[in-house]
Length: 256
Image 1 (cartoon, rainbow, N blue to C red):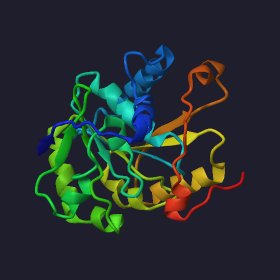
Image 2: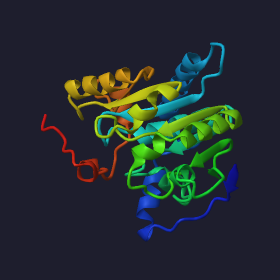
Image 3: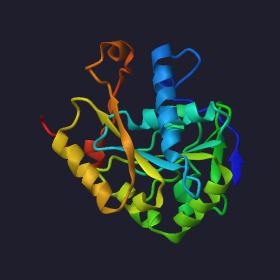
Image 4: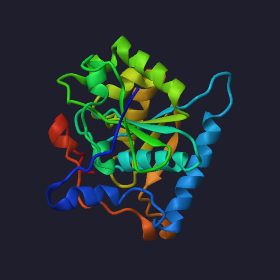
């Protein structure tokens, strides 16, 4: 495994960098948000414990874009790393990658470069968080599904399972593309993110059925930006811009 040193990435006027980093858990994060992630960490650890073999590879997904999937995945990884567990984040969104922006690391070389056999090593980058590492997306490929269906993907995951206590994967929205469906059965579980008042219940049901058809194990759902709890609403994350998956994937949001 190759371990690349963290490099400073200069974004235009620093806007993109300051935005994404502001969403990550830090010592200055509001108490209620920190405690919420700790509670989810405890639940997830419990669901992954037990059994004859260790379960450690979890994907995070949502039905559509703009539901807080990436932020939740990264903050859960940070919460796990804070317990002293060696934790890896894999950016598997090969169309609209974002993970590298949060940690200000190069996006390439990364997963796609290893899958395409352009490098013999797994290019993992260290982050500023102790015990937390990132495998960035790599060069954007013309056909991500073909790479994920290769035997090389299985080989990579076997190697990473031996090196890390937990592996969290940021995947594209399941209702938009089929990438997660391809690898779903090879994972130890999927955490489904739903942002309130963002998608219809029918779309969520269709997304869940897509995962069930490939024998993916859904560990649970996380409701994001819930309006039902005034205490959480007070501290909820407010996004400054939206990811345009509709443009990139040829899918538009339902009017309802």
